[in-house]
Every structure is written in C-alpha cells, then in structure tokens.
Image (cartoon, rainbow, N blue to C red; front, side, top):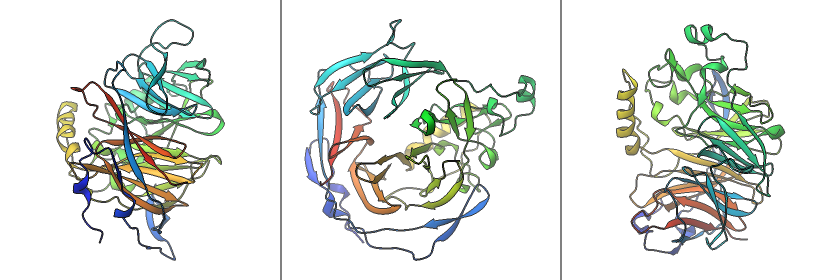
Length: 397
C-alpha cells in the first residue's frame, strides 16, 4: 500500500510541490475482461493499470483585479484562459500568468452580446458554445463573433401535449428538460452539442420515482441549426439497484474525432465507451482513492424533502466529477472528490489504462489543457481576500 501522504496538502499556503513520487501505480492488468451490465446487457469490463514515468508539479495563479460575482465557468478557448461570469454574462480573457487581457460578451442588445447569464459552456475547434438560463444558446467563433443563436426545442416530436402530460414514457423527448444541477456540454459529431437532461414530470421524475433510472434517458444531442434536442443515453445498474441515489445522478461526457464517446457517472467508478451511433461497447476504469461510496438511499414524498435530503447527504459522500480528453497528450482526465479536508483526486488514463491517480488541492476542478499544464479552478473562491485562484499541473514534455 502507498503511504498516507494526504496530510501534506495544506494548499492555501503552499505554492508549489511535487506529487509524482507519492502515488506509484502497480501493474494490475487482466488478460481477459470481466463482465458488467449496462442497459440490460452484459458488456466487457477491462480493469487495467500500468506504470508511468509522469512526474507532476503543481502551483497556483491568482488575480486580485477582476470584479467577479463569485459564480463562474473556466475554460481554455482559442489557446487562452477564460472565465465566464454566470450572472453578468461577461467573459474575462487572461494571459498565461492570469493577468486580465480583455473582457467579452456580456448581457445586452449588441450583436455579440447575450440575453442573460451563462449556465454552461463547451470549448472546441467548432467554437465556444454558450448555454443561457432561458433555453437560449449561442455559438461564438475565435474572433468573439456570435455566428449562431437559438432556443432549445424538446417538443419537436409529434407527441401531443395531452399524451405527454397523462401518459409519460421514457422515449418521449417532450418530458425532458435541461438538468441544471450538473451541466457540462461537449461538442459532438457534425457540429452538434451533447447536453445533460432529466425529467421532472409529475408522474415520471428522478426525485420521487425509484424506477426512473431503469429506462430514463440522460443525454440530449442539440442541433445548433434548428435547436432540436434528440434524447439518448441510459444509466448504469448502480442507480436502479436497491439504493435510490438521485442526488448523485450527474454525468460527464468526452467525445473523440471518430465520434465515439466515453461517459462517466458521479456514483460509478466505471467509464463506459460508446460507438458514434451511441451503442455501448465496453467499460473500463478504476475507483478513486480515499472515497466514501457507501451511498444512502434518499426517498422523499415531495420536492422539498428531496432538496433537504440532498443538501444533507451529498456533502458527506464522494463522487466523480469532470471528464476530458487531451488529444495532444493522448490522455483522458477524470476528477473526483476525496474524503479529505485538504485534497481531492485526479486520474489519468491512456488507451483505457489507468497510468496515474494523484491527489490535487481540495476543490480542484479540472477545466482544460494548455501547453504543458492541466488547469483547474478552485471551486470556493476566496471571498474575504477578493481574489480569484486557479491551479495548474505541469506535465513533463
């Protein structure tokens, strides 16, 4: 076993340290896959780990000059570090040392302004996708020009309103909506965007119906040209077992050039690979370190009781967070929370093989790669000190 090194991470005062040597990964390769279930069928599961010569170094950057509401989204876009203020719609553009270079967008009636705040963003070669709070969306090019704007449409199918209301079925797109609690859009094939969806239909919802996770969809593919959202996806068995854990239903997606994609779930240690057509292929991945995963059931009689239970339970357990593929380094990055006051965790996979599992500062939320650095935000900004902070992890050349 590795030594318990997590007590060294008092990272609010320590600016730089090496973390590569503390977590050796041993070779645990299985020659033949195990079997797990997904969507009612058995699929191969590969539990593969390998050694790596990666040695990671972490430090922090801060800015005391930006006026910021405290609720924001960090991304790497056009090879620059950006921070979108959710409330004001303003996007701050930074240099590599986190000095402010420019501000863009904002709420207004201008040609390159948006209607309201920003809920989520997706950055990629196709541009910067902005999701607003009123089902509005925008596509910005690298010159910060809005080239498309529209409204999400879940009701384009020929299912009557009366049918949707009285006889909800999991295949009816009209019963779904954006899942705001966990929303991390990703670019997909043909310039489309994948969104996280859920249903709060009175007769079919994730809050009160334990059978919801057996059949419900969790992904929506947005056509930017029409606004139409096509529903897809499903949940792994951990959500439809004896315990009811709707407070950990978030899902993360990463897509690839061949239009295949990988899906991760907050409560599931496995990663699931799908074909471009959305067909499940196999599972891989391993559990993070130092996690509380004994998830209690949350059964409520109404939304108020659910909200109270979620607020009480979720902070006491751990879960998986971000998922991202770094094409330049052929690395898949998955974040997770740890049972620690000072650290969370980050996993690196290459070719479906776990090559590193490292502790990172508590509150670290990975948001992108630039040159040699993995960048992560600090999800509890220092309000009293009136500064914004990000971390960066240096990968070897």
